[in-house]
Amino acid sequence: MGANDTMSMFIENRSQRRKEFLANRNKIYMALPQLPSLVAEKYGIYISSLDEKFEEVAQNARIAEIDSRIAAILKAAGLDADAIQYKPACAICQDTGFVDGIACACLNRVGAEQAQKAAKVYGTQNFESFKLAIFSDIKEETERQSQRKEMALLQKKARKYAMEMPLSQGQNLLFIGKAGTGKTFLSNCIACEITKMGFFVSISSANDLTKVLIDKAFGRDEAGLSDVYYNCDLLVIDDLGFERDSALAEGELLDLINSRLAKKKNMIAITSMDLVTLKNSYSDSIFSRLAGEFDAWRFIGEDVRAEAAKKKKRS
Ligand SMILES: [Zn+2]
Image (cartoon, rainbow, N blue to C red; front, side):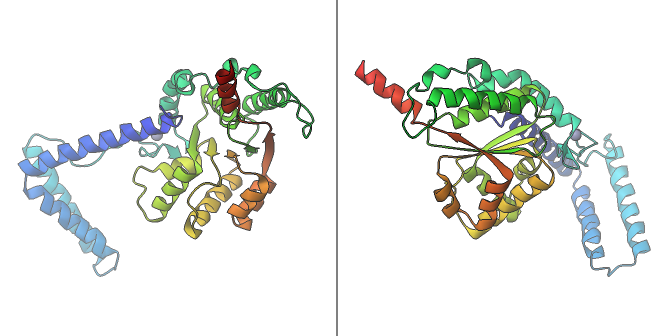
């Protein structure tokens, strides 16, 4: 189960409703074959009205005429006059989940159900199951303290960040450190905590995220996933720097980051690259946002999973 479950479930519910609607409408069209051509004529008028070739009054009269004929045909078949119109489950947001960039009550309802499942989704990736003991207590010469002590400090900061989420609008974090130093784990702890508070979190690898953004640019993001990236309360971008790079991907990513900065919506970016490599992986505009608008948290030490495996082998 992914951590992005609230939105997946919301999108799943919505596409299920649309699928049912389309199947039902097809049945009606088959049973009442006069309807599709009337509907097609109506859309034809709408489309040609875009070129303003038609007199508006004449158009409106013809549309009204078509509508009443459709209604009469449906009524004669014992159906509601709006039986072939899609009715969104939520009249407030039209099933988009957002109103002016703020999560709609219907999305929050799904979110609340999800919050109960948050424990399941994040498994043991939460503050309660945080085991500092897995981190090394040896202080390396180049570091000011041991990995364990650093982690204890970061854990405290992360808890504070999660607790202050309602007040910390627009506070962004950049987690930097080698693979297996606890970055994703700590970010999941934050995500789990604020999901329980009813906030809406989206977690995605930079690679998956840019793919969706490119789909959006080509009008192929039918599920509306890019809306989620733009509007969720906290966006976690994992594995930054490893996505397929192209000018288009960079432009879309920059637009997303700028939009969230402008709306003061929190982001956590995670990278296992060092700053220099990260700088070389991006344009100046993206790097300057990361360096200037994100609070960098450094995760020191070696991969705790690899270390644990080594120990196991030795014993
Ligand atoms: Zn709604």
